[in-house]
Image (cartoon, rainbow, N blue to C red; front, side):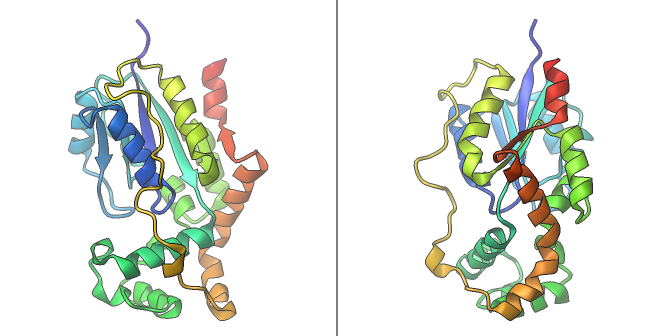
Length: 245
């Protein structure tokens, strides 16, 4: 009997995650896919993830680290296909900032809204929320703002890491690897238009001084993005290679 594989997506905010969730929710007829909606970088509820796998989920995605998912008991799942997406760090920050400015549901801290980039950074520091922007790709992957640690964690824990321009390719590949025929709504495919996108017209244009303020919070994520781009934008990891042997 072939192993029962589930797809797990680690969603760093503003990295095409809503479109990916949509693809798998639609393909599973919204019955066997679970999007874990928790605060960014807050620990998910283990019982909730246990229940998701116990129901034979085809897909689990959300704002969690893969390490946190691995601590949950994957009942009725012999194997997970793990992947994440990466976006240019400055673009990701500007999109996140614009979302909070334009959608009051995006934050429970009112003073983060209607702010310049400098004021936004000051408020994040005041409320001890810098984890939202301090190299969030690396922190989500390995728990610290370190390219080298994130690179090692990707190699050990993930099957794929890709840039947002290769999202359609990675959705196709993880679906093939899962090798599960029971997609009630048809094979997963990205929507025609991005979900939860923010118009470029709403994005602030950082000054040189603001870019300098932001750079320490982008540098390690930028190294990570460069590493993936040098590999063509989609990295099949050592974990994937070991499984293929």
